Amino acid sequence: AVTGVMDGKTNSLIFHVTPDYLAVGSDADYCLMPLSPGAAQRIAAATGSVLPTPAMVDAIYRAAGLKLSPRPIPPSAQMTTTGVFSNHNAVIREQRLMNLEAYPLGTLVAGHKKDVVVSQKLAASPGKVAIYGWHQSNGVPIQALYTGHTLRWVDYSQCIRLVKNEVELNGANRSLAEVLADPQLAVLLSAEGPLPSPAYPAQPPVTNVAPAWSPPNQFAERTCELRLEPGVRIHLNAPANFFEPAPPPATLVIYALPNGNTIEQTIGKLTTPADDWHFDIQHIGSQIRFVRQAVTNRAIVVAYLENNLKSWPTWRRKHGDTRIPEILAPVKSLMPNPGTQVVLAGHSGGGSLVFGYLNTLRQIPPEITRIVFLDSNYAYDSKLGHADKLAEWLLTAPDAQLSVFAYHDSVALLDGTNFVSAAGGTWGRSHAMLEDLAPRFSFQSSTNAGMRIHTALGGRGRFFLKENPEKKILHTVQVERNGLIHALLLGTALENQGYEYFGPRAYTRWVDAR
Image (cartoon, rainbow, N blue to C red; front, top):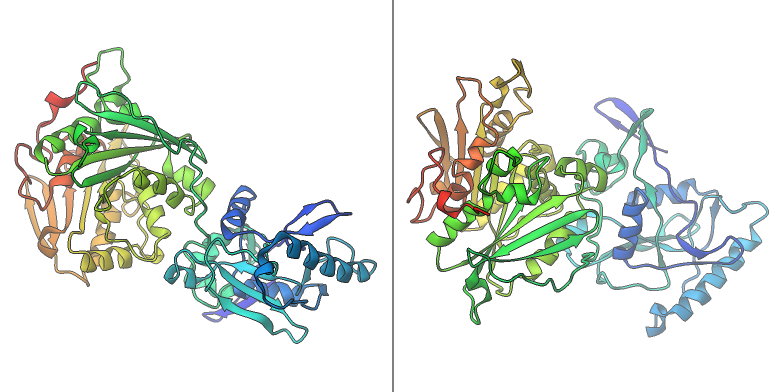
């Protein structure tokens, strides 16, 4: 248990940990097993756990019923070998057996290994592991927080202690990850401030490393699919020029699906009365084809991201944000040209995936040139640093384009009843984004035919907010009426050429008729 006083109130938090480090074997014959942070993170994710912070390691040592003295060996090239792992385990096992009667297995024990920890320092040290601990009898750790080793480093002294991702805060159950991300509550468990993403990026679990591209279809497009864990299906669609011997630079559009839709429905097709209506509400495939015929100096590749829960908000609640980079990495690895530009886009619940990805980043990399919220910014939260990251990206990346599309959903009626709150819908979230960004940028505003347009940075930041005096549901209308076309062509010489946002469908000739 840990306590802290904030704003005159004493907060008490109880967190639960494994009594010893992860081991292989049985109670009668086990070996405390050093692991890489990637392997540890996979185990943590599979068991509903997280890795501790340095402050938590300190608290675990203080609470330990049995405090063993560290038994370091001289540094050598052998310290990363399994033989030394086994020998050092034998030394610790002898210590443990001497105290077994007074402190049986299941007693909280500490002091005999360093911990692989999560830390804010990892954001500034990508590809590194954070190690801390190995407390001496005076309570001072041998190993101060250290991030000098790569993610592949594993030596005899570092082991893995798991912390349950459910804590008791003032008697109520809370998520440990939620507490660590909270700027006020994080001080209970972290001496470094909040940790929005307390995890390591695991190795991408790709089940089809070299996907087979299909033969060209009637639009000269080729497709392939990736299946990733947990429960993610990715469908890639690439144009003919992507496969040329000397292909042009690529633009990769990562499109996170809306709630309840399949990839096929999101791509769209010419429908018959027997078809599900979802096939005729987005037509992302056709809108991409419109953009391709206009932009000829780049290969426009689109990756549709679907999950088996048919909802990215639900998927994130179940699996967290740390798996998102694992999902995107193999998709980006398929781009042959190092000058690939990445577009993050999504409709409806798809925006949740975009914000989840932002939560894992210290800063948005310049390879991301556009971020598009098509009525999808429900998960926007300035407390999680979203405004700060977007503002820094817009200021430091000269090609960065942020476009936000929303309508006045808080007045819309479904069966005569409002279905979103004034603050929780995209209308409310968009105004919150504007308010948070306004101190950093100067926005100019205009209204035309009921469309409020707020523009900053010479058009690199734009909000399209549709008024709704008729109280209609315009959630998908914003997409189907050339929404993605507009988002991809904003700020170029092709903006408003051959199409109009919220005008008639400009892509009908590219709709799949099969």
